[in-house]
Image (cartoon, rainbow, N blue to C red; front, side, top):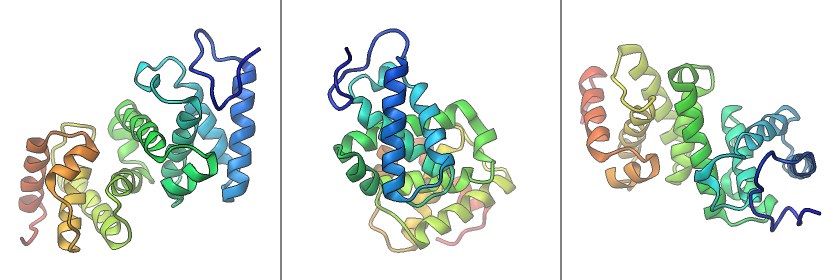
Length: 212
């Protein structure tokens, strides 16, 4: 018999039907509590099932990974439910859930590449994800999304599936809105080298004709 969901480690082999059912029941419970649309837990469950063989998530509890999967699904649907709200609903550690969400989201971006980035919710989800990690919201995120769309239209280069450009837009928007965010902060949150970010920032100032 499997151990309770809260304490069991990632099992070997195929993810059992019992484990999937347990995750589905928990997702439905949390989504009812947070008043989340029915389509989102289904998408979160699909993401969670695909995490089974990932070595980069082995150090996290399955419950944190499930919560992270829900956060990614929420971002893709542009639902503005915070990391804190989801973490509290799952009764998990906010740092662990944040790590799971960030890892899953980054791999989703990498796998979908620019196809996802240019989708209806792609730009919003990218800047919202970074903004949440940096505790940035409101006008800063709106401005960053606008900059990211403009960058795509004028052909700003990208080395990291547009995540480097998203980081650059976050930094520019935060600076213009008086947020105390450094380039080091953005580099750490986005996991993009600071030199790459700086190149994107310089390029955006030139191609978008931004005032310093």
